[in-house]
Image 1 (cartoon, rainbow, N blue to C red):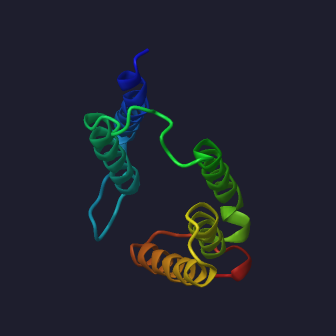
Image 2: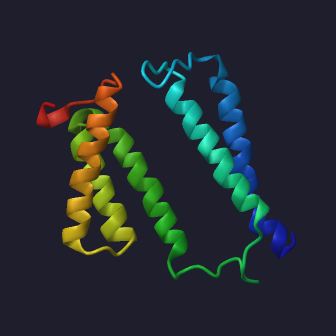
Length: 148
């Protein structure tokens, strides 16, 4: 397998996954922005995945090396995958606000190296903003231990 093909293969796989998920979710009710249906959010996520993976597919890697990223890149990817899996598992018992804030702190501080004060402030503001936005759209979110 050539370097160029190996560099574009993950993006091509993501485009395929996005298209397959979009096809599978096409039977769900889309609704509208004011009254989203069960297919509203999955459709938006699939379209975003297809668009961004398509952009990555169209643009070849800038370096001759596929592994030209920061050291520990593979470990960071697996850490994010594990964090999202734990997030999904803990969402119902712990609640949306607590899980989302913890995930954001992990991503900002642990993966991104952002300072503690900025990570904590961004996680608090981001999780509260998402909670307000989703609840205003009528989406029920897990309350967990915090009770809201």
